[in-house]
Amino acid sequence: MQITSVDFVEVNASEAQCLLTCEDVVVSLKCVSLLPAEADATQHRIAWLQDALRQLRRMPEYRAAAAETEFGEIALSASSALQRRAASV
Image (cartoon, rainbow, N blue to C red; front, side, top):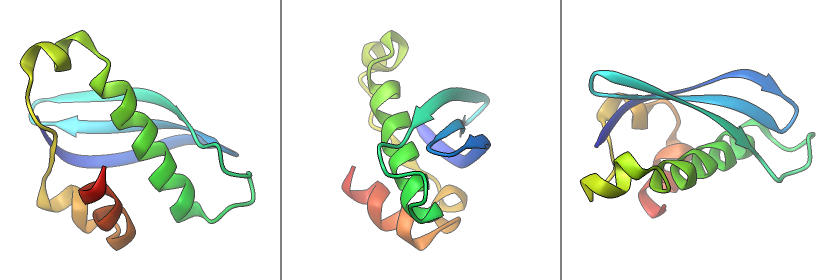
């Protein structure tokens, strides 16, 4: 599965709706950051992405495919912090 873009909408303190665009489908996940609400926005984005990937790995569709998750150039270029963090997840 290749994720081509990552967007966060409906941001509310430490919660956000994470939209993962994967080839021809968009996966929408409600994500939570365990960081304090006043933490840096980039830190929250990293935490939300980690939570989204955790949820994605538990989906039967993902487990059945036994595929690796890859990030496309567009998704990674959104933030250098996300790029470094996504590579280690």
